Amino acid sequence: MESSQIKSSVKPLFQDEYGKSSRGFKEAYKEDVFEDKSTGRLGYKKEKKYTRTAKYDDKEQGYTLEYESQLKFKHVAYPTSTTKNVKGGSSSGSNKSIDYY
Image 1 (cartoon, one colour):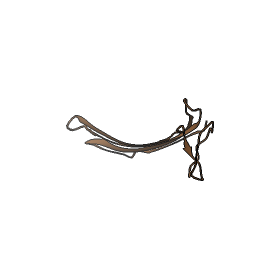
Image 2 (image 1 turned 60 degrees about the vertical axis):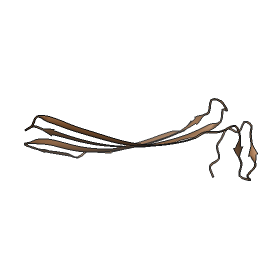
Image 3 (image 1 turned 120 degrees about the horizontal axis):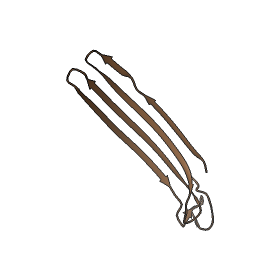
Image 4 (image 1 turned 90 degrees about the horizontal axis):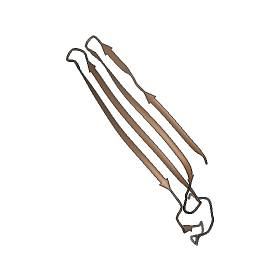
C-alpha cells in the first residue's frame, strides 16, 4: 500500500524585558491507500490539517496565555458493492481498484 506524508511549520519568537510571545503555524498533509475489509478492493484517504498557535508569557503580570486553533479536512473514497464503469454501465465482482474520473 502506498502512503505519503508532508509536514511543515513556522514559529517566530519575540522577546523583551516584559515577556515573550510566539506564534506558530503547522501544516500537515497525509494520503493513504487502503484495502476495504469487506470487499478486498482498494480505497483512498486524504487528510489535510492546519494548526495555529499563539503564546504570550507576561513576566510583569505573572501569567501565560496560550491559544490553539485547528482546521482539518478529510476525504475518503471507498468501494461499494456496485461501481460504475466509464461507459455508464455498472459492474460488480473482484475488481480491486477504484477508477477516478
